[in-house]
Amino acid sequence: MARVGEGFKLEQIHGKGRVRVARVWRRENGGPHFIVEWNVSVSLLSDCLPAYFSGDNSNIVATDTVKNTVYAKAKECSELLSVEEFGILLGRHFTSFYPMVSTAIINIVEKPWERVLINGQPHSHGFKLGAEKHTTDVTVKKGGALLVNSGIEGLALLKTTQSGFEGFVRDRYTMLPETRERILATEVSASWKYSFTNVTVIPGKPFCFLQRYLDVKRVLCETFFGSPKDGVYSPSVQNTLYLMAEAVLSRFSDIESVQLRMPNLHFLPVNLPNKDKPTIVKFDDDVYMPTDEPHGTIQATLSRPLSKL
Image (cartoon, rainbow, N blue to C red):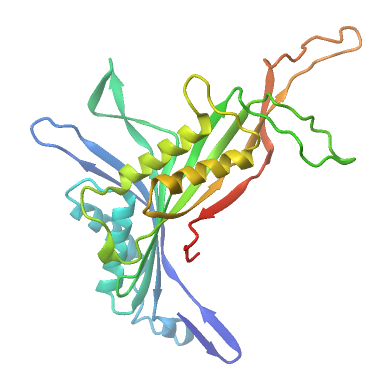
């Protein structure tokens, strides 16, 4: 909400950040347990301007109430659900339960607990911490208008060959040699926008946001690496990024746009000479110095032609 007065314009938002909640679902008759751990942030746009201008707090939803609501709603979820589904559930609650709240913005990051395998068998209640995180940003407006963005953070990918970089601009500051043989390593941050525009058009079962997240991650990895035996050549991080984004949009019609951020994490060839022995270590595509500071930054967003972005 915004108000203009006395030459000033006030825009405000409030809520609760970094609400950490874990939820366990225990199956009867010895069935497997399930656990999620979420870091939830809730921001509310509401008609509480008198609190700023005159100290009237009668329209404020206390941030402590927001925190308690996260736990209460987690308790009400009797079945396993995705971060997207929980975000939509929270957004619908805040915009319908409180007349003064016009918009709820929910951000959730899921900690990647994965079921462990013991002697090749999935453990019924044992978990280990994985790597990449599942994220979502959900915006719900009063009346049901909806925006859902999901993503992956920390998807570390590396291949030891089938990568090069040639034909780039060369000038007096250029020292990087051209190559058709190098390590390609990155830590992918991906986000994608779903085409669902209202809470009433969310598909029912068997559609599952969690499965779509796993599918997108699989497509990103398959496109990055290529076939298991031969791989696929990458002429640049830029080209590989585009092909990964294009594969996601081609495969999933319910995704409207995808953004990828792929820093180029360098593995520098090691050559170690000295005045007495010029080849202590002579590089032969074998010994590298890994470094991520500084690193190349490559980011792009690919959208469908009719996207409203």
